Amino acid sequence: MEYRQRTLRVPGVAIAIRFRDEILLSRAYGMADQERGAALTTGHAFRIASQSKMFTATAVMQLVEQGRLRLDDRAGGCLPWLPSGEGQIGRVTIRQLLSHSGGVIRDGEEGGFWQLERDFPDADELRRVLSATPPVLAQNQRFKYSNFGYGLLGLLVAEAAGMPYNAYVRRHVVDRLGLADTGPELDEHALARLATGYTGAHYGLDRLPLQHVRTGALSPATGFYSTAEDLCRFGAAQFLGNEELLSDESKREMQHEQWKVDGVPHSYGLGFDVYPVGERRLIGHGGGFPGFITHTRIDPADRLVLVALTNAGDGPAADLTNGMVAIVNRAVEADPLPDGRAPGDLDRFTGRYWSLGGAIDVVRFGGELLGMMPAGPNPADQAMELTVEGPDQLRITKAPGFGSPGERVRYLFDGAGRATEVRWAATTLRPWEAFRSGVLAGVRATGRAPQQDPA
Image (cartoon, rainbow, N blue to C red):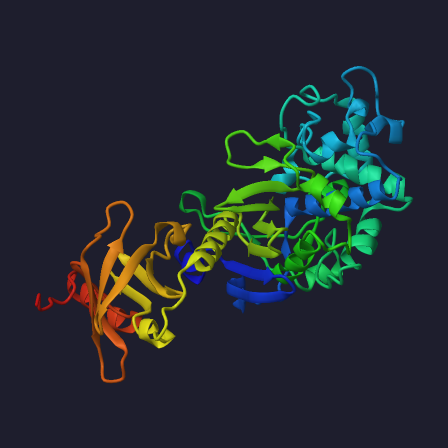
């Protein structure tokens, strides 16, 4: 994660992994505010944008369980001001809004709020646009993403609950789980904790800091802020067997594939993506907001949550969560240590080793050694399998693509047992300090690396 954050020059990345009832990993890399030199911490919050839809769907399903709403209710039956004639938005059902299959316009026709050219719409504007804009596609024709559709769900929650959407979701979702650094809209608590969001570095442009803004009536679609650890806690409430927020019956309804999403390898349920990675069937959501890209993956059966948050408009959050899942899967599948072999027998080979071509990580997974490229979005899927052949030699037994299967990996160790040089097939790799002070210093001085003995 740190390698990807630095290589892609993403200002900051926060990640967390929860398994069952325990946070196994929580880390922050990079900067929360580059101009002020403030390092990112695990306590910093991020705008999580469309991950808000998971919270909204949870609120809707709570009201369904209470009998205040039904999934097949038409929106116009709950909100009589909506036009409900043939082909009008009032005929769209709650289920269709949750699954993005009602054909509702995505962001109206004046969506400059996403570029911070205007304020997000308030409730009056949202009602006016919804009343005047019929669905652009027929109901149940295809998956068609709509932020305005989730804004409408917020109005339906408020009507059924008898209180504003933000108040309901804070009381019945956020506070019930004790999410101290999560909320449905920008407020003073958020402003004290939010990392600064930055524009993308598209086409080599400089990253610029962005002002935090409120999301008005689109809070149910995109307004939430949170931390990686709080999102792990919310994800745990979606585990099967956990009924803090919803029954398993409701969760299965939400996590069931409603529509295939064209052009990508996943489907959509009710407020949640449904996404396979290896043998895992994951749910969750991504989020894109001015200055932030975020992603959460949940395995409700195996009770695993993985979160990646970035404070950049081009942050690779989805790649990071998918890479984390692949690494977890590879670790779970690894062979155990053979009887009589201690971890240290393999750990002596592990580390990050550098050449002008980049870095290779030698990592122990159980009783296996793997060579992994940390620069790639999914290093586990492209891992090289290594076999120990002696106290200072490995063999590349499996390598994808144009790798070097069958060739040797030879180590030089100092008197303390630290690797000082690794001959990876024909390439010489070194630990960072030796690479920086030797190879990079030589290139800076002469344009060439110091010549080595080929023996």
